[in-house]
Length: 200
Ligand SMILES: Nc1ncnc2c1ncn2[C@@H]1O[C@H](COP(=O)(O)OP(=O)(O)OP(=O)(O)O)[C@@H](O)[C@H]1O
Ligand SMILES: [Mg+2]
Image (tube, rainbow, N blue to C red; front, top):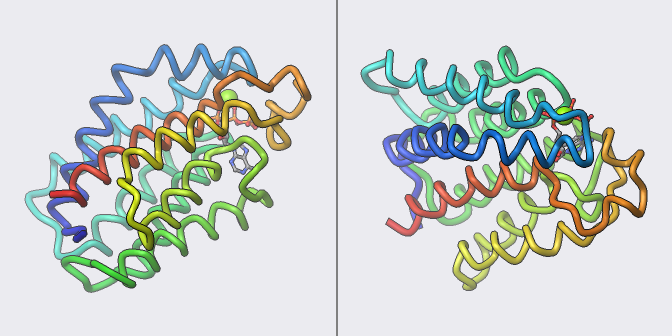
């Protein structure tokens, strides 16, 4: 498994298109256990990311690409998820600065740093029905041999049954069980595209 600068860029462009397709679904989920803006927030962010990527001919390395994506998401998404998704890419940039591709431990270390960064920023941990319930299993799977797509599907299904303990969703208490967390679904959209480029 290898992540190149071009591969990450491809995954991000496909993510932007897929978020557009699932924008209403993401917003509807957030209407059930939040304030009904997640699809709108992420669509605004990834539309801006897509524009930035298309406006630039090429990126020197994964660090430069990740930094631009992180800054763009922080500037445009807003809400709780803007700084959290932004943190993912800012952490990638820190780990992968100067690298045109990563594999093995370097690949894992970037995802580990990103997942830990989200947890620190959100004062959250896996098991609380947030995006972390997808990011953590995905990161661990980079060291395992289960297919990444399978891990993502399972994580998403498992997250659904959890009780929300963070953000506005936590106000719903036990009523949040059985509902899909919008940030977890959105993370699965991005990670599925990354898995696709990792699998070549
Ligand atoms: N503390 C946190 N740690 C990790 N993820 C979080 C946290 N708070 C919210 N999230 C994720 O962000 C998503 C909500 O993002 P949204 O764009 O709707 O922002 P928001 O409406 O400001 O959030 P919220 O209502 O959760 O405070 C949730 O589905 C969850 O996955
Ligand atoms: Mg919301």
